Length: 210
Image 1: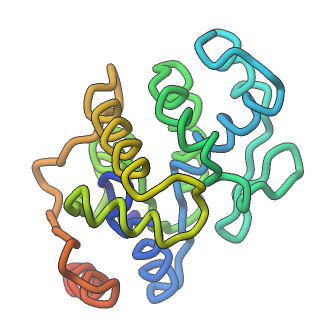
Image 2: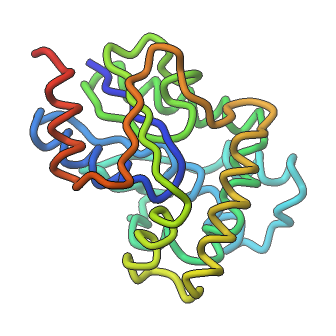
């Protein structure tokens, strides 16, 4: 079974997807972690982020595993390093590289051949798993998105700077050549702005028939 969840940053996707996976006792899979992991590696190696071929080669050479909902790169658990400001600022540009998206999508599909998953990202319902049994699109106002990110305490940016960064990233994500952020026609749309995490989980679980 595949439960696919899309939406912009700061809508509660990751938290909600984790909780849903726990309640259903299936694997939580964060597609964004793969792009963030590649971005982290590119930055660490000093590769020019605008050199698409070089970035793609990094992705192809990288051994990516997903264990207990943690991303493992070349044997190193990098989950705690994926939300730095530097990774945040560059992940969307890296994920816009079309051949690189194909590499990551194949990896995601490979994982789901053996496991039932709750997978979240930006094009999970439209590109990666268009035939997923359950599809959801989570949204929130830009103010709510920024405040949630600010409260995570993982950024050195001010609230206004976070808001601007999210606005830029959402704009970039919506205009990607492939894998752009959009609402699948058959996805259940949920505005999480005024809802608690528990309320959103309840809506999703009520839609899933086991």
